[in-house]
Length: 459
Image (cartoon, rainbow, N blue to C red; front, side, top):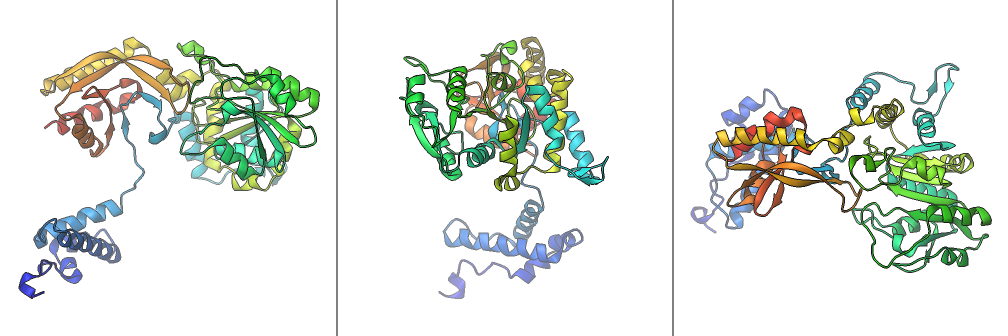
């Protein structure tokens, strides 16, 4: 290929690019090595684009600007806030539950100073990190003991490994669920070393099915999994937790109940279906109860294990406990969250419950305010009835009435993409060829940024 026909002939050398005034100025704020990486990556991207027939080599000034833009992306955090206007309260992809102001403060305090994570101040001896949440969990649920790990999947693996490794675990066939991200109960059991024994049929299982498969020598646990992310309806039947507990007590086999979402409040008070609570499950006699900390509890990501003191002691001694243990900031946030429940202020303090409890009048007032501002900027918006979702694999099929702003646009998908590319991305709901904004999940402090981003994106 001759020099004149080479499509890359105008591509500058790295040193030439680094000597451009724009990059020379950037060297005042960034290390030259970082600038060099940005320059090389920019040139490589342009080279690939040109060779693919996408475009000609841009002018040197444009390449310099592209390099600076790439540099800014390199030094910017990839994890950053967004505005959740979808109406999904516990949005798995957007970080699930927001932490209360008390929990945020607690995390900052333990992060910026030494603390007594594993130090018993009165005696001056080594303490246990699990103490910081255990006493509160026991007081709130009635459990004899508790331990906290990094998520509910870890809680399942650890509990099964410690209590039923190389033993049989009986479980209703209809409860062999996928909990999200393609993590499935049978796979979790296999990793724990427990041997899965499916009981009954997909739609109908009886207590006799469990009893007929129960071998006291080989059976480590009877397991029940709450279907928190889907519903089984129609011609169905299955044993209650109380029936399984009674069977387990007769044969000396503990019952483990995986609640999934887990809650300490009765969801029925918010117009939703009743979700089994942690304290109800303990009171019903489940020897082990597992639940998440970052769903309906409204705290940080964590896996909560409650139950009999002898069984929790075995779990604490298992080698996987250290692999799954939580850090100081998680414990600080969880303790602060639990204190709100202890003091009876959870609905007032915890954002998850604040959002769920919002009334239609408040939601309508905010939506109308957004609409008026948008209309003043020439954006055709209307306030309509809509439904919010709890989300996070909780309360399947249950919705909360809301008032949302609906904006009809020629290409809703394209507009949604523009909103996601804003400095503070706005994540919306797309429905009926329109953009929907639900105030239930937008923090009041974000109202101005939301409206400003909408106006800017429509220009």
